[in-house]
Image (cartoon, rainbow, N blue to C red):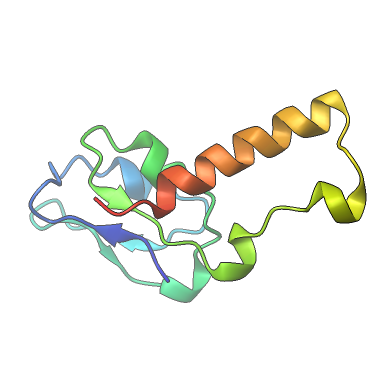
Length: 98
């Protein structure tokens, strides 16, 4: 699913268009950005993180929501555990409904 832009919240700053590594958005400075290439989105979250008014949200595909299970792969090391905590926190932040 492509990024979701709340047109009522968007302040037309264009940061999402500038920051997107895949150039997913189209923007003409008069209307809120639109997702021009939805299949090109990497779900990197750059647009969500950099939007100053929190107008963009991502719904991650199911495959991207799954975190490796310690029961199957063993306990992660300290650095891996911290990385998994950060990844899980980010996943929760972009899939929450507002």
